[in-house]
Amino acid sequence: MNTKSFKDNSSPKHSSRDPRFLEALTPILFLIVMLTANVFLFEDTLGGANQIALLMAATLGAIIIFRNGKRWPHISDQIVKTIGSAMPSMLILLLIGSLAGTWMISGVVPSMIYYGMDLINPKVFLITAVIVCALVSVATGSSWSTIATIGIALLGIGKAIGIGDPVVAGAIISGAYFGDKISPLSDTTNLAPAMAGTDLFTHIRYMFYTTVPSMIITLIIFAIIGINYDFNTSLSSAETVKAAIDSHFNTTPWLFLVPVILLTIIIMKVPPLPALMAGTLLGGVFAVIFQPHIIQNIAGEATSYAKASYISVMQAMFGDVSLTTSNPTVDQLLSTSGMRGMLNTIWLILSAMVFGGVMEAGGLLTRITRPILKVAKSTGGLVTSTVGTCIFFNTTASDQYISIVVPGRMFRNAYREKGLKPEVLSRTLEDSGTMTSVLIPWNTCGATQSRILGVPTMDYLPYTFFNLLSPLMSILFAYFRIKIRRIKEDK
Image (tube, rainbow, N blue to C red; front, side):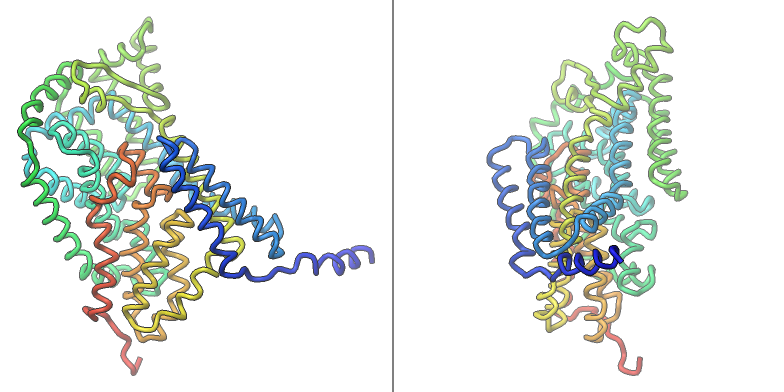
């Protein structure tokens, strides 16, 4: 009887109401103000300023949710669920840090740079970077693996021949996300048609209408940049860079077995975590075999080679490793931070997931996007609204999967009611949700690629032409009614 009385008395206190539009928008406006202030007040926003901004905005969102009658267990459960969805990404990020370390001390990355400088013409280097990354990402289905392996080597080559890091990073990301977008092995390429209600290969074929023009324009832009780039001063130092690498590493084509084996493992559909761990351990083994002087240099006073090997490989996997040469450019290429270097990025992802979990728990994100469905009347307006919603979720929920899943659920019936086939929605989700995730500094993709390449997101953003063009191409096709598939009336 007491229990029944307790339930009767407590239920009104915890009755919840839907948030008002201004309430839902308040945490986002607060976050934008704090992030803007951090850009001007802190030299390194990734070092903690942006993380605190996300947590403060999450706190404000939680207060609003409490006022609307939500209980804390509901909020905390959603936060844990959201963090759990990002956990594979964070584990992959840690392994990428350790892989970069062992691939550096083994000479894999230095050898790629050494031989790549001979094979690649500087004038067409940017186009080559886009095409190579596109081919690898199509074969693997992973932009992250492509950027963490081939991308790092290409960035080093670009630095050695005098091309700015942001430009090279833009070319690498443009190519890597081409494959992430159209490869049947990609998780987002499978997720988008599942949310829209079409099959995988219909989705891929339909995406070519917007993807091919975007990539052609991207290649033309990079060709123009390459032709007009001034290499007069940088090319003269290329041989100096090669000599510095050759004097410290045993550069040999045998080292290319490591990336070849890793790419083979990934193509065989081995999950990312065991595949990256295999690549990390292979790098450590090849370091012990091919680079004994590097091993001794890192280990310092170790008495035996076995002890020195253990210390050096472990140090490369978890901590800082830097080798000093006579060339400052090479010194930058030969420094890694292992898993430790990824901790600030993981901190940012955790903070972003807390904010996204709070916003989703209180229905704040849904409340903000609800008016969009009322405004979108034409096909062009509906596609534009979908693109804007995907970018909105990439910015607020900080995760590309949420930017595909939630808008996919929201707009699925709207597309059907307007007589549009589901592949129109799936293509729009991919063109906007997948492509723009890497352009947001606190999104899991933007934070990860920025850390892997060592280039701030806002620096490489203007050069990610393929990613910037893809959502615009979707909108353009919709307004001009180019290849917009409709459901026949008899169906």
